[in-house]
Amino acid sequence: MNTTDSERNRPALFPYAELRTRRSSVKFTRYAHDVLPLSVAEMDFELAKPVSDAIIDRVRGSDFGYIDSPGPLAPAFARFAATRWGWELDPEHVRVTTDVSVGLVETLRYGIPLGGRVVVTPPVYTPFYEVIEEALARVVEVPLARADGQWSIDLDGLETAFAAGADALLLCNPHNPIGLVHSRATLEKVASLAAQFNVLVVSDEVHAPLTHPGNEFTPFASIAAEFGARAVCITSASKGWNLAGAKCALLVAGDSLALDVLNRFPEEVTCRTSILGLHANVAAFSSIDWLDAAIGRIVKNDSFLANLLAERLPAVEYHRPQASYLSWIDFAPLGLGDDPAASILENAKVALNAGHLYGESGRGFARLNIACDPGLINEAVTRISSFVRG
Image 1 (cartoon, rainbow, N blue to C red):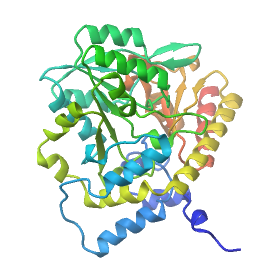
Image 2 (cartoon, rainbow, N blue to C red):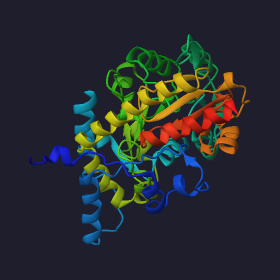
Image 3 (cartoon, helix red, strand yellow):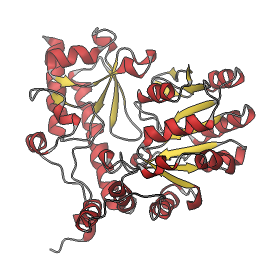
């Protein structure tokens, strides 16, 4: 039987023991070898072949120079966005930088007044707090609303914060660590409020390519202009195709005023982008078979984890992700305190992300990475349940 290109372009899963020896990223070097590393947001999958080929081609051509524009990446991402989400963006509105965090910092630095107020919606990606501080701005928290086990943006709280003089909103879309895919209706209300109070919306959409089947992702910039809202989308292939170390991210202005913000960036914001990362991103946004297969693995692991927790740790509450490979688990019923990840690391030798670092509403929670061998997930739950029972 012949192997098709589609079948070849699927994510191979490395055995855990092999990963421990061949990878040098912080995920595999931060902890001792007896600790299962399920915290850092990296996938244990082999790169898509077109991506690795693109990097190798650059290396063979000794192509290690600087860049000064998105080049082929702008149309490559535009094609992906149109096909995946129906977003017909203007490639001329695309810029590049080193990574998503740099994009957030620079957009705030040049998009709002010095010392401005930036809204975040905890529990939320912990570096949001750091980038706001780096931009010399101030944090305004509007925690997500939680009812009947469901999370959502607190629109009333958002309106109050905007009316009180907020300058920007850092939107996590889809939301990390919860894996929440905000509905189009919710985002339209956010856009309407942002327009009403002249709030710049900076939307981190790096997990969007990993939206699970049955959920509809809406790029915020695709609807912002309709409501008169200023918006900058910041994204990358870094999460969807496991390219964090490639150091390339995209910024997309949703309107002419937002584009003016991006055009004020110093040249170095672009020039620091990795040329290897740029070409890796170009290849990634065309590697749809690999992406879909990776999502398939993640969805299976999500179901596997849900069943394991129901069987072995029935007291915990698992908030299953609608996007990405990060699982948000409420360990509070187990009585492990505000930081269950610390107890689990010490006693079960499983490394999770501490929920309280995502904001006060994350106390009692922990985040677990499921982009790995299901055997590793089984071992982690076995260790945690043994610790709890013991």
